[in-house]
Picture (cartoon, rainbow, N blue to C red):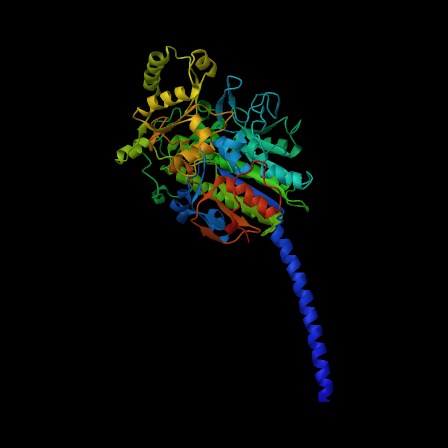
Length: 556
């Protein structure tokens, strides 16, 4: 019997080893497939217009559990995330998030810029070869044609043989058109004035879908024509400055910039439905419309991953008017937090918790109001371009005998007339350098670079690195100006953005949902890293101009 037992045991061991081996091989194959790609039913990209990173931390104790905190606690927080280019503005910001590239590559070098090839000013999303859909105005004459590379949304459409849907939504046209890419099924934006409707361009469709018409006729926009009061007791908003101060702008017919803002009475004087954009209610109607699109377009309902791109724009309007330290900006973010929670609950219900992936970032950050900084004894100020223009004109006449040598000034860049320079028997490089030296002597200027420097050098850090990433050889100028930290070209109330300074580049980056780790990092990440990270998660091709790197710490 002991002899038989000895024979049986090796056989059992061999059989058990075979089962375990096969089981391990099967598990390994599944793991390998998981490592190749994660397949959420829906990807949701959220861009918050003019969001500084510290809005997450300053207002953290006021946020509920289901919005920003949910993303932070259940997902991954990149705390040291930056724009790696300038100008830091809405058009380049949205393009960079979705292309994984900077303006040097994707070509969107500003919201508006001087087109030196055609000697005219152009708008980043403007395209009069298409017609408006949903309005009789020209507000729908838009397309992404000035963005010269693909987006992560384009690559997902290509990967799924155009079966996966892309829907892009924003109050601002450029906040929808650029994220949607060249292949979006639809991009919608809000046309205010006396209409208050969501519209689009014939680039995407010839007529609005029935559900959009139904939404427009539902009275949703009309319901937000109401007084702006604080979400919570204003006395608890201790993370912001006093409500009554000289650093905030006023709407027409307002005597003070304090709460409550009786927007209902101000509508006719301040653009009617457009005024909604300048209150938190603009974000609320954006969330309403995005949730309606989620349901009516049946996003995340089949085997092919869909993409919903949302941009919340009211934060930018509020920041420009009231400044980054205002009670208004705090209330706007607390209300946005509520809107995010509504959105995430809708995603849980309609797509399924754990079945979608979300990222949230910004298109730029913003500066403290310089008048406030000055009162706090921090170096800051404003540029008087009337005086500067006179002084610079005198220099040009003295040095070259004509002002015509300069063709245009756009986005703090000087464009020279190369034909006139040639006719004067001058060298472009030398003229660039002489103008750079002249501007370097102006008090408000921090530093100056020439187009020749951008062509000849490869910068890897600091301000020149940021400028070079924003410098497009075919579209950018001959001389690049950088204002001193704390100095802006703007009114003496409200905040703005656009510079390569860190207060304009430091923006949030949060990921959560399917395929995302829980955690955080203080290692530097950059805006062009977002699209490659999502592409790596999905196992799709990177956008065609992508220069960013997948953030490996984010992915499971």
